[in-house]
Length: 366
Length: 74
Image (cartoon, rainbow over all chains, first blue to last red; front, side, top):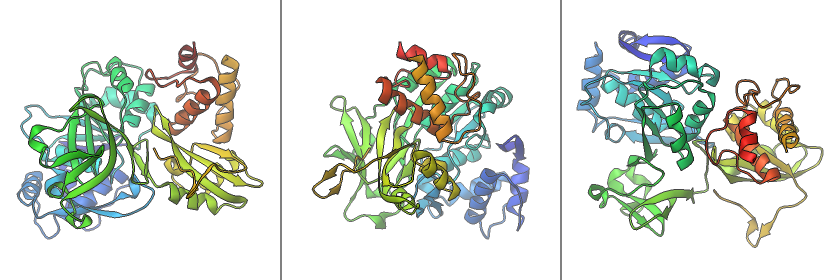
């Protein structure tokens, strides 16, 4: 039975168990190695001789097991966040009569990717790791593997829709999360994924999945009203849902996610007030990027901000004051420093001055 | 208008150091397969076109080719 497919290479569940028991397993598949390492940490000291053993161990010990996610995969500032296994598999469904084939369009290391991973492995299903795949081979992948469940960011879905040339009725469910989605994207996917239903998930690394919807609007389910609330147009979560309760003072965790109401119960997310930008599902700290640009020769000052964008949620922009620099030279210099592509501002303007407010630079937070 | 769009695309390819020929860009040119643009490049293209021509080309759905952009600008 196939467990994982990455760049056309298949790994079976037997291979996974073998590698789990091997002290130094070697593979050049980054996604496979990431999750193998995670499973090794979780099952340390245990005798795991079959996939059934592994599943049983994970479920039985879900309240005691936890792992750390290094969020450098989706943010510009690396930090470890502890995740409870019980939170990670809170919404795992195990009663399906048919086996799903998952297309995973999240980077390994993101919280969403771990949720897809455990949903699949607990049901002994197959994951096709799409995130690092060249979009040009999208048609070949969807034709070959008959993906049934596609789970990705809205940006990743947009890129798939741009690249896919044929219809794929094998896809029955599309789940997106990690960034705001738009109604126009929800309308578009049916042209390619003709049989798919759509689920929009609101989740965060700190809490796991919280809200589900089939549009860009969410509402708080009755059963969750004691644990999720909106105060001053900001979503707040009770500490009982948090992975790490030490992070907050009091009973409620402020997600910093700002909502806009459609009516008394339905709302959508409009922005974050925690100093981060969300571009294409990546959470980015503008000040971190400003530091990188500031270090380039010729740069005197820089202002990084987000601009609303229908494809990425927000597009990363930088206004730069300096001499002997151009947008091209700055992008080349950032690439030379091995800065990841999502951290390089797409729009760089060379300006003579910034617009200022009383307390400093004008910062447009999206 | 078409000339302006093609100029924006060419400038974007040069600025981002994408190794692709820009000699023959026409309606059927695929933004991703032929020109090698990724999601970040497409986002930049959206902003540049909106800034110059006042239209968000991705607002109403998915854009795959240069011709799709022209349709959105009509």
